[in-house]
Length: 325
Image 1 (cartoon, rainbow, N blue to C red):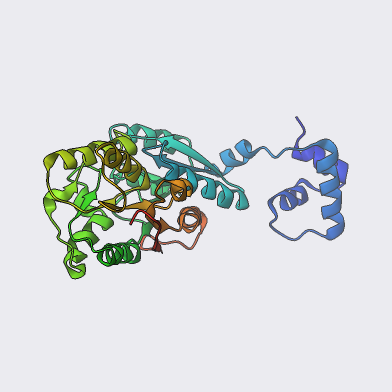
Image 2: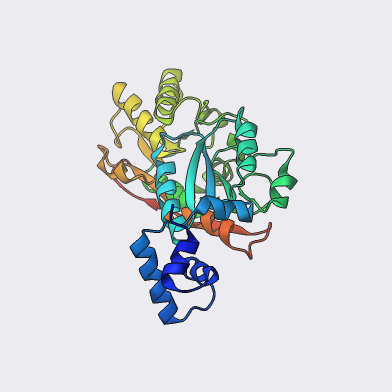
């Protein structure tokens, strides 16, 4: 294996100079830089990140906790996080978690000294060794009730969605929340719906907020099952707000199976603005999240030395109107 010492000897410089060139930190003359770069290329040198991480007692790995790897929303985020992390010489590693095994996953991440943990799951991780993570310099994003956070602000998107239903003459929306009933009141979309539906002339019937067991059951299946249950209940409704586009996909299938026409009989609005929702038939109206801004914020909060526990990055949303309303 070619070492940093080998590069230094070929270039005729010190190992410290080689280190400064490779890290991009510290002054190096243009002549010395050219010699080091030539030696690196000639010897096909590859930096030993593992050894460097062991010296620092921390890796360059950002761990991302995800409950539903089949939801394209999280893959959009992962792609943008990888892009941002690469700019900062870090890598992103995904970990599939459930509430019951998150402690074991976090214990493994602590043992491997990752540089940060991003929680994309719907539960917080109030684990007993929180202080140990902080002592090791491992930053936690959206992991606990305290610490730095990235918040998707659904205010504008939900405002526009309710206004869209009002313009369509809808008055009895159902909300396909999909998540467990104890989680629903804390979701910003559900909360906004309860607090503002009446302002738009929409009835807010708690019985029409439909909860399920996502992500244990995947989103399209939850959407289908809840919509089918609503139809069979014979409760009147003229529109659906869906927690995610994938739940909207399942809901649309149930509506079609039971003979409903979209949007003539029922208007449907999703959330996430996944790439393929414009190709639904009819094309899905959806609340768009700036996924790139969200993903970049996670990486920046982990790697920025100036971040404090009180820092909150808010990501805006907006409605994309298509033919399902």
